[in-house]
Length: 181
Image 1 (cartoon, helix red, strand yellow):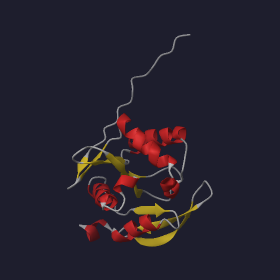
Image 2 (spheres, one colour; image 1 turned 135 degrees about the vertical axis):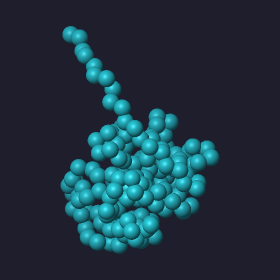
Image 3 (cartoon, helix red, strand yellow; image 1 turned 120 degrees about the vertical axis):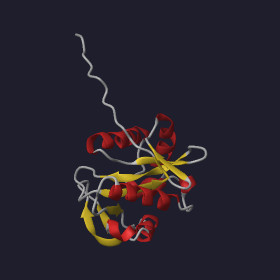
Image 4 (cartoon, one colour; image 1 turned 90 degrees about the horizontal axis):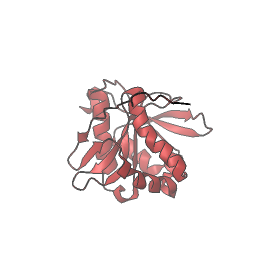
């Protein structure tokens, strides 16, 4: 039996640069840091800890989301050394209540303002480039660091979302684009 293969799909993922960070496409060299985070107790805020195999699927989905929706999350990288520090960006998974600005930072970036700087850039991209008029962020109840970041971004707690996999998330509403310009 012979198999025919289609041309590989290409995905264009723009990069953004802030004062200290580059938001860029995920690459193979970023997977180790992502898998390490995903296996740790710190991943509890995003549905973990999970196995390396599950982490690989979720890591690949970062690129797939760009292909399916035309936007997605970037790897947050240190501007000087290009070290992966987390993931951030606009996303809209199947079953979600509406488009979200999502963030996750790895342990080395915790408490340094990385998530705030990256999430602000991601929201500016969603509002300015994608033309979003509103955005939410979702947090697990009790994820106090993400809740604090949502508040720092000007978002207000709005409701609870019953996730299709059987848990609840807090929904935080971001200010309208004109309120954050």
